[in-house]
Length: 572
Image (tube, rainbow, N blue to C red; front, side):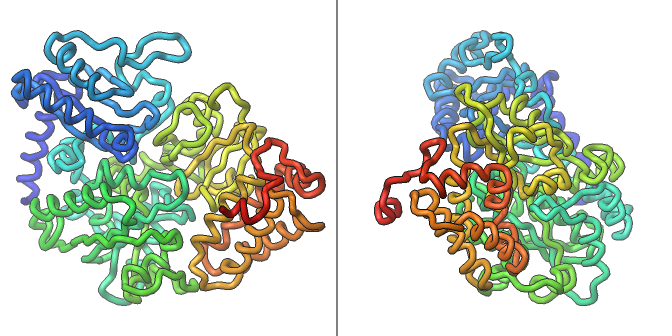
């Protein structure tokens, strides 16, 4: 396919999608029925809903009238399975297989909206017909998630219809590599994998680094407990990641890319491989892309599930067939990365931002967010909150807006106690700080981090000692063991937290715990060990009274800790 053929395909594909924009149908169908098929909805039964829709449509002879499409994750996981009927955009939630049959008979055959499956506003009691009306979406701005839940992820045509593969020909046909990097630099995009390093600076360093070949790597080894941002993008919009990687390949003079995706994400692997195959077949990957003289291809490498392989140097070792252990930096991957060659490694969300930045311009993206934290950020909102799911908001949005306005507040009328950001590497931000803007600097000032985007809401029934113990258990279990501070230090920290939670604390345990945390943070080899103590440091700073109550009075203020259980029983 060349650029002229791509333009024709875009026009044809847009015509087919007009129905989903409420316009007159042009593909022969009267209805497009979208079923959320992300992993979250799969777990709640979306496959049976889809099958029931297809079977009933066939049974009633509506195949020429109704098209059923399985999409990626739309966002509100607690409302799944989700079915949206276009052209009117009617949003049905918590749909069962029996409900699906009723939707076909009532809505698709008789033209009557099924009122009982509509979302009811908790504020007014009003029934809301379309998903943009729902409070969960009102303060969001979807850039990374622009296509998730709205297109068939297995259709390259639907991606192209929504301006997919518009940035790549622009880059290859009229921009120098330096101009591409400058546009990314102007955008202010920072790596969304956790460290927040400026993306344009990283790309420029790789381009200038001596040595060939060069490589482009996608870090899809998301492993934080409760995090599913990258998984959902790979499942719901895989071509956006491929296009971003190809643009980077041109900018840094790399012809080869690797996507490292953890084995626990089978649907993400399946959909991303399908996207690779489609892009190759369409001349958008491989040799002489779009007949514009640029070669670039991507392969998937499946990770075995080691959390430490989310650290960039450990990930590169794993791709190369070595033990997934981090290595000292410098040199950084941009100078000496995969196979000891210059390498750009970014996470899934970072790559998905690249096409719209090129299409709309770096200044457009830089106008979103705060002075130092540009653009939007995707969060996996979980824990003791009413509305759980994927949330994308401009950086600078406050925690209150995410937890209370988008998330609907704490479940069961309980009081908010804290918000854990950054997963096991982050920190617990107390309820008193809920008006904090979400950006890299503000979170760091409170002893937490942005991380890859996990956000866990904690209510008044949660013991902060127990919460810290949970995260430390995860960190020490996932330590690769290469460096002593992380291998032994996190184990000692976990043992102290266990003693505290079981009423067996020794004198000075809390102070020793804090001292250990600082030592490990300052001496561990990689980000896992350096940030692993954060949950302890943040909870001891803000909830020291709970630690002292465990240590001195052998009491847990919430009753969550098994204070009278013997160690052997607790381990069992």
